[in-house]
Length: 296
Image (tube, rainbow, N blue to C red; front, side, top):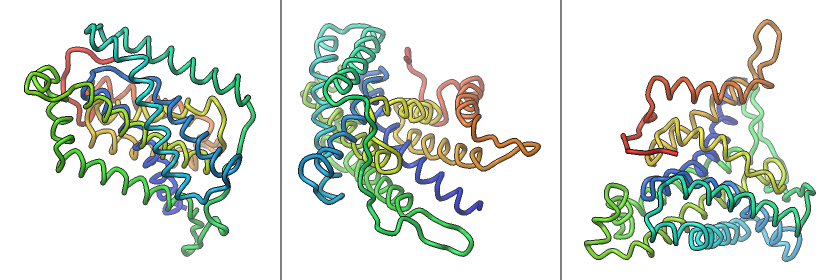
């Protein structure tokens, strides 16, 4: 049971990590929390549903790539519509947050108005959904999601550390104005930033859609990813990864725990937000975060 629970926690935590990395990437350069990220993740899941079920009946891997591309483009358009003019006017971070919340509500209501509130299922990735390891029953989808999430995060780490655009992103996370003065096109850099965050979010949305269902309000799940990002330290890529995986493990262990015969699964969210509150009291910048002037 412990081994099975850990595998499940790692799978869910890796999906949280994919979402949390998107929050941290944007925060590291623009110093605000992109609350429209959940809507982008939801739209990525809907793209997968469209190309796998509703229109083309594509296999899973091509649909996953198309969903990542679609979510990346949507994230790019969100930045151009909601944040670009605020950046050029050097608006306070609070204005970015308000704009992000407005975009999230608008995109969710567009889904309600055009597609409806129905729940849609994505086709199962594997014909046999689980494998037996001793007494543990492990979902193949959990292993698949964990492996692909780690691969995507490793690729992002390579981009950030060994490419010119990655070097520019890391430099901008310390001083965006100085990077602009040195000749880096900041608009292009921010576009790449949102494309990367959106693509990872699209992958997470597809995995959540396969594991659960696709519906307009599924973006609420990103609240958990945001908790992971804050636990790890907003703006820190390693922190987002560790925070997301740690939260997934905690939730999985809580889900199978009991106290006095009373299951704790119904109190899972209480433990998640309680962990966040406790950590912020002890270490306000998170596990790997650095001190900044303002965090929203």
